[in-house]
Length: 388
Image 1 (tube, rainbow, N blue to C red):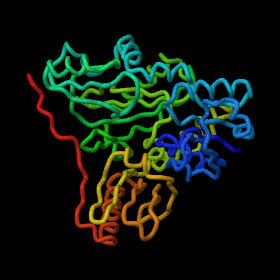
Image 2: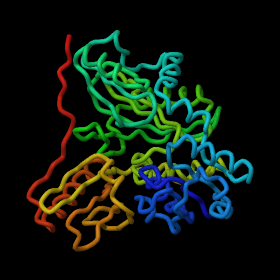
Image 3: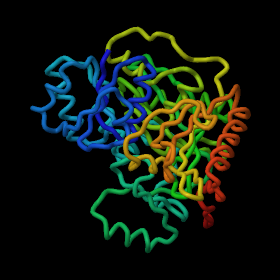
């Protein structure tokens, strides 16, 4: 089957990579040339999908359209076009419209009584300010004084969610299905760089069994509240031994699905396609016990190897997949022999977390020795003092 992945950046990397793992032929579409996912499909078309009249010659031969972008106009155009052509569109536009607004998501959290960071001004400082629209760490800011918050709000024309800053490890879980039949996949552990951008995913999780069950239960309740058909990604933080929801996204996320695939064998893109193609779930994957996986991004220059957030992959040009990459099982990279500066997403597996991490250390060491890299940087967020 030929599938179209519309969007060639971070989500597009995920969608194209896993679609190929499902055995599908892949056509990547983006309005810009040289986007990262343009090298991961068999075909690439440069096209602005908001020009609906241009969609037919490019999409008419596909059996499934997988959106991998967050442009509302583009999503609406794709939704209209696929409906008129009766081509499955692997997306729930209604659920996404709620999850893409942090204000609308907060209303769902409050209605369900979901634990979350306390809102300002009813909380202590420091606080985190996040724009209502958008996802991840984009434009997130931390303030430690009331005056700085007020000045920020006065300068901005956007809607903001302002909450207490809470510290703790972050976790992610995908839920897939349709009303009355949802499947929690695998909880993964997230590691952040100094800018709170996700630099690393580790699977399986180190959460206790009862916290995993709590996470699955609250995530299914969120999917039911949205009447979701498709996929939702839920991100939480563990604080005072309680999971608190940070955000939800009713779309294919980046990073975690590939870690899940290598750990369990479950392919979220394939499962998503089966839902919208009305195909029975194949039962593939769900490997027991799951393998250990380390999935992380590195940036190599003439003398430095730095582990860094996924933003480094966004402007890297066309990427390709390399197997047995300096000992890593696979890498998604722009590396070619002789290139001094390059980036890679390393995918490393082992029989459990411990063995995967030991293998990861060997991979890093081999790259450092091969290129005589004298500095190694693996930054994390600076500790923030909580005020009484």
